[in-house]
Amino acid sequence: MRTLKTAAAAIAGALMLVTAPTTSASPPLPPTRDIAPGIAIVTTNAAADDGGTCTAGWLVHTSEGRPGFLTAGHCNRGGDAWYSDADGNYQSIGRFTRTVHGASAEDSDIALVELTGSTPSESAIIDIRPVTGAASAYRVAVGDTLCHYGMTTRLQCGEVSYVDASGVVFSAPSAGGDSGGPVYYRNADGTATAVGIAIRSNEQGTVAELISPWLAKWGLTLDKTRTNPVPLPARYRGGR
Image: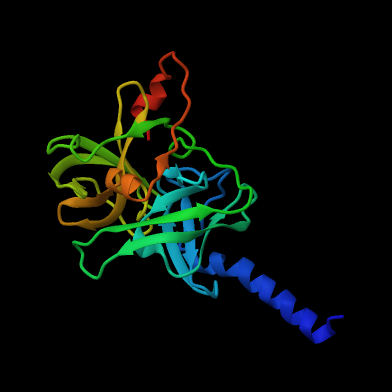
């Protein structure tokens, strides 16, 4: 039987785990119905007493069928990923199982968070824009228009000024907290084609890591959104 002292310590520990993401989130995360590309997340250290905000990227499944999502590698602080559920309660949703983040700004920056528990997920960007597939690195070209969605700046779009086999730069603003968010083509029919994840900003705009090489390297399958055969409403073609 636990003593009063050990029981109190256990309760205090449980409260620390619940409140730590709240203090780590700046600004506090908005309530979210389910896990989707573009939602705000907090990632904490192993003790769950420190962390920071990022954005969830594309939903995927591993070759073993486990669900997860991509985000920026520098978002991995050694602990779990959390979100704010529909009631505003912080819930742990997954753990980092793969991370690439070098010391140089030119290095790749991407991570995989595998989902745990029974939190519902939705592959459409923030539950709105359906995702129909992923673009190969060779499809993206200078002059194209790309968009990203992040927890801080929300929807931002701009023209591609540079692209290589692993990354792309486009003239859209981004800020702290946007890291990991989905980068995509907005198609004329209202759908999105996944291109990458936002990893940082520079004088030219937003820098993104292309996801197609990592889908192949890590044996991942992009989660696509089922769409009706009829065209989507006009609001989908103009927003997000």
